[in-house]
Length: 89
Figure 1 (cartoon, rainbow, N blue to C red):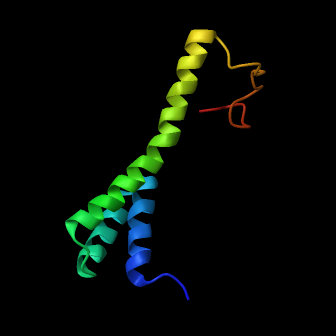
Figure 2: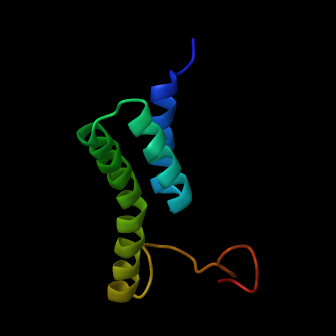
């Protein structure tokens, strides 16, 4: 037994938000409306996606603040390059 179509669409709403994909969000929002989700139910899915997405966002800023205040991370060696590519970012 797998997920229902309704459950899959709520997952798709969260995935669209997590992936910053506006066309996907618009598509899955319309599908959720067609499947009978209320605005309140969709808002709850939005809120969960937002909370999940905020964790890495907050962590990167915490790391930036640590670097700025301490000059380095706790006992961390600076990487030879950032992303495994010498032409990082």
